[in-house]
Image 1 (cartoon, rainbow, N blue to C red):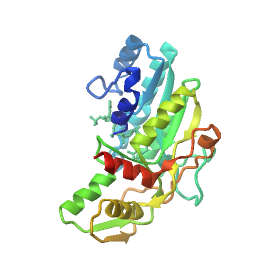
Image 2 (image 1 turned 30 degrees about the vertical axis):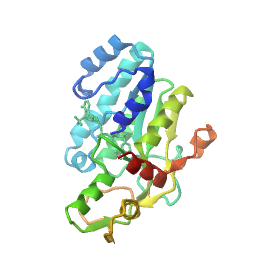
Image 3 (image 1 turned 180 degrees about the vertical axis):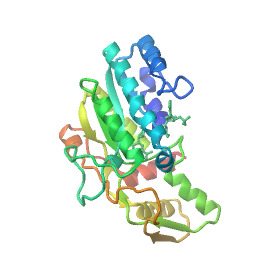
Length: 264
Ligand SMILES: NC(=O)c1ccc[n+]([C@@H]2O[C@H](COP(=O)([O-])OP(=O)(O)OC[C@H]3O[C@@H](n4cnc5c(N)ncnc54)[C@H](OP(=O)(O)O)[C@@H]3O)[C@@H](O)[C@H]2O)c1
């Protein structure tokens, strides 16, 4: 999902695009071969096992892709002296705070996906000057995302019952991809939060989707069902450092939603 948008934003620079068909990032030799042949100046590493529920069922696979895969990329990047940008997640936090998480807050993931991405951050940091960019709830073209899930449910006449006890910040991949390109140009490094402005619960996000799509259906707020994969109850990311770098604030999540829907 993010890869497709980033490819669009970076198209004028003629980037090399790799996906699953190019090589498997858990195959360290293949990763090394591809990167040493291409000799890129910057590698932006997005590939990940992103299905949170599946990661919970298959934690070894999550670690393999989201941590050891990053290790393979980091070693190959170091071998050619390139820079690394690694995309991470708000799910590295446990969600017990009630004010936006800063880059200095300790990570403490509550599920297998978050643990594997936090381990991936550690491996990305093996590249001197790596940028570890954490972002919130992505939505955009080219992937199964919450906006499409809600629209599908309405299309299929299913009632909308959406959790109201998990708060974060959705971000449109279009806004994030533009920010990533600017951060690459600025040679930003270290851990950085790239959050859209504002915050909401999944319920409030669903309400906004229904409203902006002109759908006349009720949305019922519910609590996270017992037995669901644990997720942080609050994972809003502070954009203070992004703003201090002159790269923020990013547009509000609702504006991203409007732009995404306009582009459909
Ligand atoms: N989605 C979110 O809400 C969110 C939030 C915060 C951070 N992030 C991070 O942002 C990045 C992009 O997320 P996204 O939602 O755009 O992801 P996505 O749509 O799920 O894309 C991930 C890509 O990685 C590929 N991939 C998976 N395992 C691979 C492997 N072993 N070798 C090679 N490629 C592999 C997938 O290929 P297949 O489709 O063939 O499996 C897919 O093309 C990820 O690093 C993710 O952790 C996402």
